[in-house]
Image (cartoon, rainbow, N blue to C red):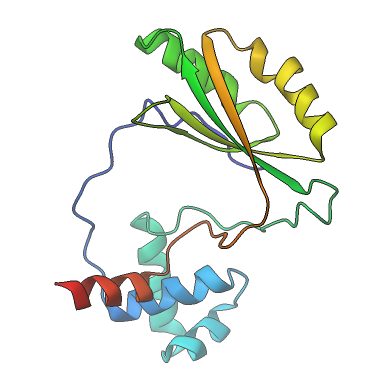
Length: 180
């Protein structure tokens, strides 16, 4: 079962990442591309024997570097070809309203990601729908039934230029190191 939760009330992430080395980044990068690698395949790909690779992998999992393993579904193949980004402004901003809104939002199946934001609106929400009729039904029967919404603005995505659920630690670290 997919994990859905309101992460608004969780503590802010720390700015300083725990130490991990180049081999750890290779392991994370390989798993990012293919989370179904066996330990032997992973070890071969990163240039380790199986036992040290397994030890590192378990340490990375225990250290929270790997949040979860999941299948990335092709929504278009399932009949849900439209991605909609919704900017939402609430009419109040107290903790109770924000918490209740976030709790309600994560229970809506069409919502695949939602962020509390800074700027002109309070939330940026990404939904997947089959088309405009489904989107209208989603707005009327799900989103607008959540108390506290003052204003929304929707934008249909035409084509994804990049879609990823995580960064590549090899590329990011190399880019970051080059800029230092």
